[in-house]
Length: 171
Image 1 (cartoon, helix red, strand yellow):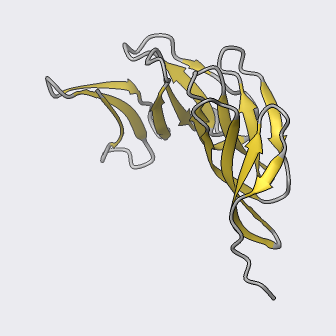
Image 2 (cartoon, one colour; image 1 turned 90 degrees about the horizontal axis):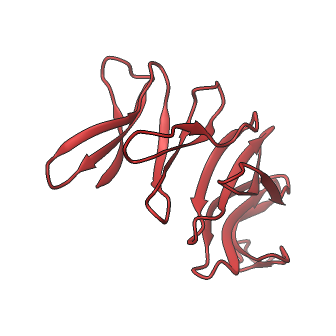
Protein backbone atom coordinates (compact mmCIF):
# COMPACT_ATOMS: atom_id res chain seq x y z
CA UNK A 1 0.00 0.00 0.00
CA UNK A 2 1.04 3.57 -0.69
CA UNK A 3 -0.39 6.69 0.94
CA UNK A 4 -0.49 9.89 -1.07
CA UNK A 5 -2.21 13.24 -1.48
CA UNK A 6 -4.52 13.73 -4.44
CA UNK A 7 -5.34 17.22 -5.74
CA UNK A 8 -8.70 17.30 -7.49
CA UNK A 9 -8.84 19.67 -10.46
CA UNK A 10 -12.47 20.57 -9.73
CA UNK A 11 -11.46 22.00 -6.31
CA UNK A 12 -7.90 23.35 -6.18
CA UNK A 13 -8.25 24.12 -2.45
CA UNK A 14 -8.77 20.42 -1.74
CA UNK A 15 -6.18 17.74 -1.03
CA UNK A 16 -7.39 14.21 -0.25
CA UNK A 17 -5.63 11.38 1.56
CA UNK A 18 -5.68 8.34 -0.71
CA UNK A 19 -4.56 4.74 -0.15
CA UNK A 20 -3.31 2.88 -3.22
CA UNK A 21 -3.23 -0.92 -3.18
CA UNK A 22 -0.25 -1.65 -5.40
CA UNK A 23 -1.21 -5.23 -6.32
CA UNK A 24 -4.61 -4.21 -7.72
CA UNK A 25 -4.11 -0.50 -8.52
CA UNK A 26 -7.23 0.15 -6.43
CA UNK A 27 -7.43 3.64 -4.93
CA UNK A 28 -9.48 4.40 -1.81
CA UNK A 29 -10.04 7.98 -0.67
CA UNK A 30 -9.71 7.83 3.11
CA UNK A 31 -10.30 11.53 3.69
CA UNK A 32 -11.52 14.22 1.37
CA UNK A 33 -13.78 17.22 1.92
CA UNK A 34 -14.60 20.23 -0.27
CA UNK A 35 -12.12 23.12 0.05
CA UNK A 36 -10.17 21.24 2.74
CA UNK A 37 -6.51 20.31 2.50
CA UNK A 38 -5.23 17.16 4.18
CA UNK A 39 -1.44 16.74 4.03
CA UNK A 40 1.47 14.65 5.36
CA UNK A 41 -0.21 11.24 5.57
CA UNK A 42 1.90 8.72 7.51
CA UNK A 43 1.46 5.15 8.74
CA UNK A 44 1.63 4.51 12.47
CA UNK A 45 4.52 2.14 13.23
CA UNK A 46 2.12 -0.75 13.94
CA UNK A 47 0.18 -0.09 10.71
CA UNK A 48 -3.15 0.27 12.55
CA UNK A 49 -3.58 4.01 11.93
CA UNK A 50 -2.92 6.61 9.28
CA UNK A 51 -2.20 10.10 10.55
CA UNK A 52 -2.46 13.34 8.61
CA UNK A 53 -2.83 17.09 9.05
CA UNK A 54 -6.17 18.60 8.00
CA UNK A 55 -7.49 22.16 7.81
CA UNK A 56 -11.06 21.04 8.49
CA UNK A 57 -11.45 23.20 11.64
CA UNK A 58 -9.80 26.24 10.08
CA UNK A 59 -6.55 25.27 11.81
CA UNK A 60 -4.07 22.59 10.78
CA UNK A 61 -4.79 19.80 13.27
CA UNK A 62 -3.73 16.14 13.41
CA UNK A 63 -6.23 13.43 12.58
CA UNK A 64 -6.17 9.63 12.69
CA UNK A 65 -8.06 7.14 10.53
CA UNK A 66 -7.80 3.36 10.12
CA UNK A 67 -6.63 1.99 6.75
CA UNK A 68 -10.15 0.64 6.14
CA UNK A 69 -11.55 4.19 6.46
CA UNK A 70 -13.08 3.63 9.92
CA UNK A 71 -12.31 5.44 13.18
CA UNK A 72 -11.68 8.95 11.83
CA UNK A 73 -11.05 11.34 14.70
CA UNK A 74 -9.32 14.61 15.40
CA UNK A 75 -6.26 13.96 17.54
CA UNK A 76 -5.20 17.52 18.40
CA UNK A 77 -7.49 20.31 19.46
CA UNK A 78 -4.82 22.87 20.24
CA UNK A 79 -6.28 25.76 18.28
CA UNK A 80 -2.78 26.18 16.83
CA UNK A 81 -1.44 25.01 13.47
CA UNK A 82 0.52 21.76 13.35
CA UNK A 83 3.46 22.29 10.99
CA UNK A 84 5.21 18.89 11.09
CA UNK A 85 5.07 15.66 13.05
CA UNK A 86 6.83 12.33 13.36
CA UNK A 87 5.72 9.05 14.98
CA UNK A 88 8.04 7.48 17.56
CA UNK A 89 9.31 4.01 16.58
CA UNK A 90 7.05 2.42 19.23
CA UNK A 91 4.04 4.49 18.11
CA UNK A 92 3.37 5.61 21.68
CA UNK A 93 4.37 9.24 21.08
CA UNK A 94 4.72 11.80 18.32
CA UNK A 95 7.00 14.77 17.93
CA UNK A 96 4.92 17.73 16.82
CA UNK A 97 6.02 21.16 15.61
CA UNK A 98 3.27 23.64 16.46
CA UNK A 99 2.98 27.23 15.26
CA UNK A 100 2.22 29.42 18.26
CA UNK A 101 2.02 33.03 17.16
CA UNK A 102 4.76 32.64 14.56
CA UNK A 103 7.12 30.64 16.80
CA UNK A 104 7.35 26.99 15.75
CA UNK A 105 7.62 25.08 19.04
CA UNK A 106 8.54 21.46 19.63
CA UNK A 107 5.97 19.34 21.47
CA UNK A 108 5.56 15.72 22.52
CA UNK A 109 2.12 14.24 21.83
CA UNK A 110 0.60 11.01 23.16
CA UNK A 111 -1.70 9.72 20.38
CA UNK A 112 -3.78 7.61 22.76
CA UNK A 113 -4.86 10.53 24.95
CA UNK A 114 -4.12 13.53 22.72
CA UNK A 115 -2.18 15.18 25.56
CA UNK A 116 0.89 17.29 24.77
CA UNK A 117 4.04 18.20 26.66
CA UNK A 118 6.22 21.12 25.64
CA UNK A 119 9.80 20.13 24.76
CA UNK A 120 11.15 23.49 23.54
CA UNK A 121 9.47 26.86 23.22
CA UNK A 122 12.37 29.10 22.25
CA UNK A 123 11.35 31.86 19.84
CA UNK A 124 12.22 30.64 16.38
CA UNK A 125 11.54 27.71 14.09
CA UNK A 126 11.94 24.10 15.16
CA UNK A 127 11.66 21.71 12.21
CA UNK A 128 12.38 18.24 10.86
CA UNK A 129 12.08 16.30 14.14
CA UNK A 130 13.41 12.73 14.18
CA UNK A 131 13.52 9.93 16.74
CA UNK A 132 16.42 7.70 17.72
CA UNK A 133 15.50 4.07 17.09
CA UNK A 134 15.50 3.35 20.85
CA UNK A 135 13.64 6.64 21.58
CA UNK A 136 16.35 7.77 24.01
CA UNK A 137 16.87 11.02 22.10
CA UNK A 138 15.50 13.13 19.27
CA UNK A 139 17.10 15.41 16.71
CA UNK A 140 15.70 18.57 15.16
CA UNK A 141 16.65 21.74 13.35
CA UNK A 142 16.33 25.11 15.02
CA UNK A 143 16.65 28.61 13.63
CA UNK A 144 16.19 31.65 15.86
CA UNK A 145 15.92 35.37 15.21
CA UNK A 146 19.71 35.71 15.64
CA UNK A 147 20.68 32.06 15.08
CA UNK A 148 21.33 30.36 11.75
CA UNK A 149 19.75 26.93 11.21
CA UNK A 150 21.58 24.10 12.95
CA UNK A 151 20.94 20.54 14.10
CA UNK A 152 20.36 19.72 17.76
CA UNK A 153 20.01 16.59 19.85
CA UNK A 154 17.73 16.35 22.88
CA UNK A 155 18.08 13.56 25.43
CA UNK A 156 14.81 12.10 26.68
CA UNK A 157 13.36 12.35 29.22
CA UNK A 158 15.86 14.90 30.66
CA UNK A 159 15.35 17.37 27.74
CA UNK A 160 19.09 18.14 27.79
CA UNK A 161 19.99 19.75 24.44
CA UNK A 162 23.30 19.62 22.59
CA UNK A 163 24.08 21.47 19.37
CA UNK A 164 25.37 19.11 16.66
CA UNK A 165 26.24 21.49 13.81
CA UNK A 166 27.65 25.01 13.82
CA UNK A 167 26.73 26.90 10.67
CA UNK A 168 27.51 30.38 11.98
CA UNK A 169 30.92 31.29 10.54
CA UNK A 170 33.60 32.34 13.04
CA UNK A 171 33.97 36.09 13.55
